Length: 478
Image (cartoon, rainbow, N blue to C red; front, side, top):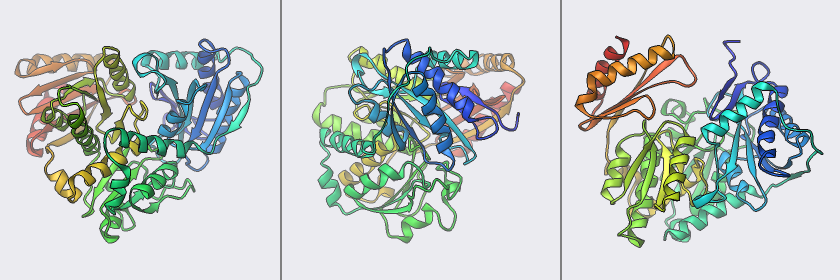
């Protein structure tokens, strides 16, 4: 079944429906998660939602059955984004969450992601399980241990979760001094592409309160109008967002993936800004607002090692600092929690794939937070988005893949890279090898899902990034 793999990782379970992912597997995975919850809670309450892709009902029903059979009470949101499920998890009496989603994967895929609630300084916020907890779920699933027998749990539905999510974003804007009514008064025209999936339940309600919102692909049909990852090539056809924004004389376009945890932005000219800018725009607005209220504080932003150094430049501009983590949302959140426990002001987290984690809302990537902060910055600047972006730092990122024989070959390649270039810059070995050399950097790591090395380089221009990758690729190939 190599052409239809079942992927198990810190991000959950993912496969092709009817082939590598069946209702039986979904039930077993949900039961494994329920077993872990039963070790912590007497009678777990779990929120569940699905990303809305066509055919997702079958996997949702199977997961609900697995949770109920294990004694969990289930609150079913039906079609709901990953961050909406996270916000619903933060209600009193709820212990965990489950999302039926394959994120940006094509329509034939689906999967299951789990959420747990934080303890300590960020008490009650929902987030992806730690790598250790994720491994424990996988071990239970693979061993068939499931959950101990119990009286079946209770089932209820909650259609109000999207409204709760939108209200939480409004409250967060108000808390940082960004009046939502003032943003609405600017009269922005926004165009939304939610690929006819779960983002429609939140992006249109929020954009309609902050702007004049136009839905491009915002039905709940679950039929993707294009490949669902929000990249320039997927948004650029004749009926796509890149054409719709200038064609409708809009000020900005927003593109989500099916579970709406990532956001890509298009400016008023129809130019794809790039997912790396989503986190940078959010950081600029939050740091600006924070400096106005607490100018003497040094806040922290957490981002993974493969995220653009634009975030470092923005942080330096506002007297903040950046903490780098291994790639993966769970690692970013873990660092955010650790720093918060030490009493530090953790303002924001995220990754360069369009993922923004605003802890005033929740501890998962949240496209709604990114939309709100983008509109807030546009309101604060009173000038076109293209002009705002032109004043942000600019670098070129180049990404490549290198075939890999096995993990041992990866380790040897990374050792060669450190030996060859280590003396030229700052080396970080949290996740593969990242080396910062002057105003450029390179990050090389073994993929968790493919037999490849991922090579990423960033420099002030593409030619220098390509040259750096050429040099690095020559070293790792040996």
